[in-house]
Length: 211
Image 1 (cartoon, rainbow, N blue to C red):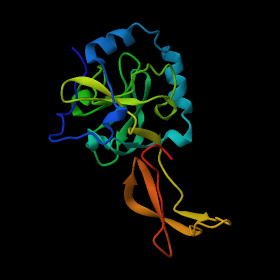
Image 2 (cartoon, rainbow, N blue to C red):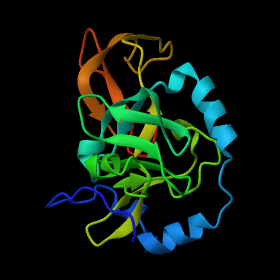
Image 3 (cartoon, one colour):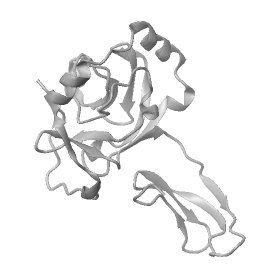
Image 4 (tube, rainbow, N blue to C red):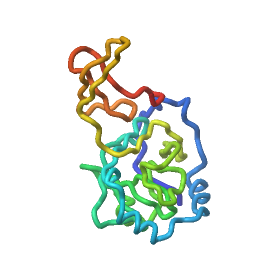
C-alpha cells in the first residue's frame, strides 16, 4: 500500500498553483525511496542522544492543504520511531516521525496506532533524510492531494520554533519604516510570524516569494 493520511479538506484551493506540480503516485515514490541506502541504527541513536536544542521544538506551516498539521511540535521524551526522534504537535494528535523508508513524515493517529512502523503520512519530504533533522532538509516538502498524488508545495515550512518578540528597525535613508516592532501573537503570513510597528501602520512580514 501507499501512504495514507487524514481525509483531504473539502473545498481546498491552492494559493500558488503555478509553483506546484504533480509528482509520482505514492507507491511509486516510496518504492523508489526504499531502494536508497538507509541510515544505520547507530547513527539514529546517536542523533537522538545529541539532538541540537534548536530542534527540540519545531514550527510547521502548511497553508495550502492539510492545515490541521500546522503548529508547534515538540520532541517526545524517551520515544523513538525507527531509531529516530519523534515530534508531537502541541495540543494535537499529529506527529512528525521517521518512516520505515527513512523519510520525515507527518502522520495522525493511524500512524501512532502502528507505532510508526509504517509510511503513513499526509505531508512528507520526498528525499530520504540520511541523518538530517527535519529542519535541515533542503528543497520542497510534499503533501498528499485529494487525487492521491504527492504535490510539491513551496509554502510548507518546517523550522525551529521561536522568534524575537521585539525588533528595532533603522532605515537612515528614508521609507518611514524605522521604529520598534512587536510580534503579532497568533498571526502567520506565508508560514512566518508578523511584526507590527508600535507607532503607525507598518508591518514586517514574509512575502509570498520568501522575501
